[in-house]
Length: 284
Ligand SMILES: C[S@@+](CC[C@H](N)C(=O)[O-])C[C@H]1O[C@@H](n2cnc3c(N)ncnc32)[C@H](O)[C@@H]1O
Image 1: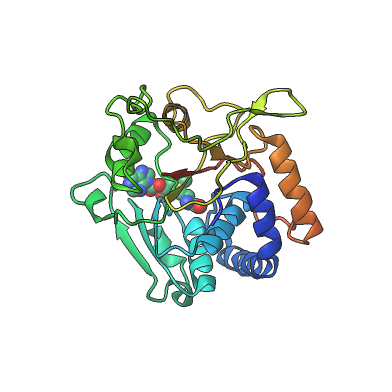
Image 2 (image 1 turned 135 degrees about the horizontal axis):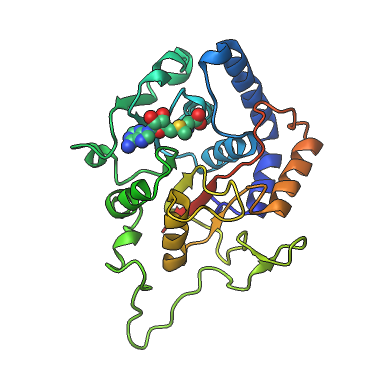
């Protein structure tokens, strides 16, 4: 599996073009068939990137926090169905999703829990072996602080526990040479001259927990005191790179993806939104 970088995703668009076309068709039918009763939040590119990463990784366990009417739920379940393996555990305070997930998609691969994911016993029910965590719930700083402190340390190798002070980088033992994971030279956005965040990793092999968080980059920078601001600071402190297809944050990556989708005949809009503010990263 490859980390979510622009180059890796361009390859995945080619690799899964046929299946993605079919997934887009079935999602369009679901959304249009539901009429106004199904409100979809994920934009098309970020939904497709989610599908492609799930196809390539073939996860055993996916956790989704924030289903709303089930738009992201059905994208994720479509990828698991197409993989022929894997289960999804979804959480939401409200249970509107139950009206929208077709039985054939839910199969025995979907389990939904209604309630506040921060409530008693909820986080403990999230398996430490979760391969993919999809976060699209409360977009507040307080919610971000909750998952950074209570959920992330349970996943992957427990990266959040490397240092008890999130501002400090993890200590390097005396005499040890730190292993570079990413090239640190920033790639410059040709339009703005500003470094962008889609740096190529040196080592593209990956086996930690993939995470995606919605609604981070509606603008070039998240608002102060938002979920996005808290998350980005944490990622920077931990030295974890991310990918975003956001039109505002990464206009070149967004344009390249749109160009390839047009070449592959995958560009007819399903949703009107074009912001694609999601970030994708990997917990080591
Ligand atoms: C933006 S919507 C999710 C949209 C959905 N992912 C989609 O693609 O259409 C956010 C959802 O998160 C849920 N939510 C907010 N805070 C939550 C919490 N603490 N625990 C569980 N669900 C929560 C809300 O009830 C809402 O349905």
